[in-house]
Image (cartoon, rainbow, N blue to C red; front, side, top):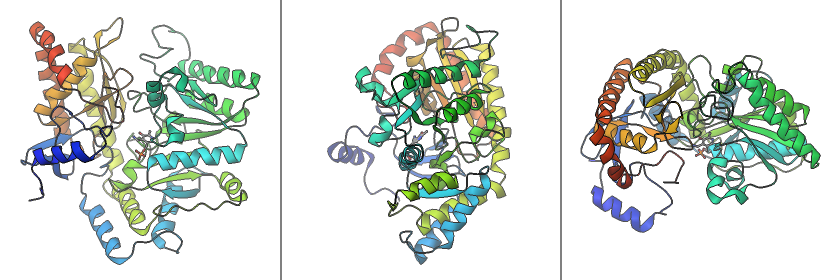
Length: 466
Ligand code: PMP
């Protein structure tokens, strides 16, 4: 029995000794998960849940290969990276081989936040500039430096929370954003969104400011599963580089083959799209804390030329690198990237089928196993169906399917399951969602909703606004 405490005791101790700001999923009735396998999680009573939330358990929860690699290395040696070790250099070589030239120099860290904080330092040192261009609704991590460039977070502190070195470009959301196919039917949306970045650069120049970096997730996740339009990154990168900045691709959530066709989501915008700095994390360790920054020789040289050494006690330790190496190996051996493409398309197809039947589904979008379903109460006005989304999540949990929501209005159902998600899982999700949407069509149900969902607040992955 993996339980030391009863669920009630766990809740009681958590309330007493754990910071209240650390929020749980399904707050009104949190889950106590005691083991997991593949795409399934099991609670203390042995109930089995289909996990559509955990993109971190990339190759499947407790993949035996990953478990073995970690245990074997832990029994042999774990130390900081001031000693030569094969695992670290092999990991660096592998990451470099998966990324386009000239991205070839790695720094190992322990979390996505650390990776992005280091990326920010590299960009500042290399360019000599301070300012950052970020996207609205972006989330890049929990460190102070990253809250500053994460409108998803700092907007919660009020408008004055934006620092003057931070410049917020509109989120390139073609469904609900500033430019959509509805309001600009004959225009090139990617170029239009990029033009806003250029406008920011020009406004900055008037104040004597220059960007050190354009910081963006290749597909915005917390922003609501956003897929930028074609030519967005290509045009933005040209503008940012012309202004003396570097381009940072945050692949912490969406990297390592989740999009199916490519290893990295920025590659969806074209083979010629090459960031100057890429940050990776989450799926890299399948649950073990390991992350990295990969950059060019030139940028690494600028950092070195400061004369300040970079040391990170746990970053790149032999166990972390053994795990990361094994994750990349499994992705290739088990063809999980190709699998994500096939199953992701089945999921998209099923959800698009539901969209034809249920007006509450305003938009279905996705690539590979990165999928979003945006719910609205009125398709024409795109009114966010926030409480309905929370209700659906609660009902799906009762059906033993775990889904989260996100986006500024928390009305986007997010699907980012482990990459071993199967065709049968797709069927299970579509059938359950269809049943719940049928229930919702009944008028009385809609009225009852409001009351129930005031009690059952479910939080999105990084959000504590509820
Ligand atoms: N970048 C993105 C896009 C993320 O989604 C997250 C975490 N959700 C981070 C960075 C921060 O990663 P971590 O929580 O590992 O510090």
